Image 1 (cartoon, rainbow, N blue to C red):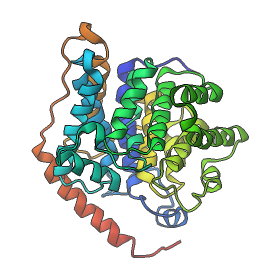
Image 2 (image 1 turned 45 degrees about the vertical axis):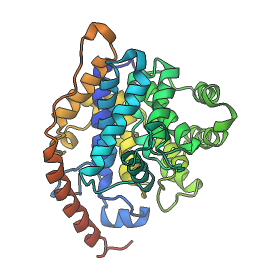
Image 3 (image 1 turned 30 degrees about the horizontal axis):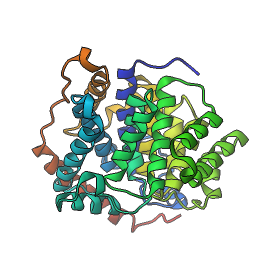
Length: 363
């Protein structure tokens, strides 16, 4: 595999890749494969609002995770506790901004945080894919410290989800992002063995699901065929053991090609904004900003989390891992009151898409 990018480029590419994948998949979110293809015969541009792309909760969670990692870096002696606390408060205030898309388990977990449950015990028993969308940036920044990467992924997961499968899947995404960012040749045996060493027999179900994806890639199957083989023929569900194997399949099938990775996973249908965000985060860590199609970046109409802001966030997060030599690293400023106005506009567009789906073609 090609040599790795500088960490700052990989982190910026991870966050931008998440955002672009999220925005591309958003218009098709929840559609079956057949209906998606009928409505959107071409998917190489944004179809959400006047040819422009907006991001959903997937990107917001990735950005909050990066922000929390920056905050935690100031307390290297208590990095896990600091990360957990910072991310928990960011999630609390994120919910107050009336985001249009909130997973059921994530919403319940955040409500428990507001009710006073400690961050270590706020999650609900669910194997949803929410934690996986927060994981790529963890893998990019801390993949060279496997035990810390595991504990950070665990802390992020258990804020909202307590089913071990959600944690194992989130770790697998972080590990894949580490492979991508470091430019490592992929070795399925080593990847799965690292999961076994981290989690033992408790991860057998997750390992089996991911192993199936790797075997499918070796056979040369396309991602859509693999998704159909695991019961996702109409669309990929939000179940972590559906989402994550399909995302890893798309990445490995098109490794080094950001465009093809993201489009392959979107064409599987279902929870396409999240699957494309996860696959985009992994592929973006390998491609960097320069490897993401320029027209997709130019037409991403996110505010106040602009493309420039997200790039600066990724670079700041990378700098924060350098330790004392980097000094105090701060997240780029964000005009928080603007988020509510943005979310109201976003909700209106989401409702318009809901009405659009009542119309033909039906596929």
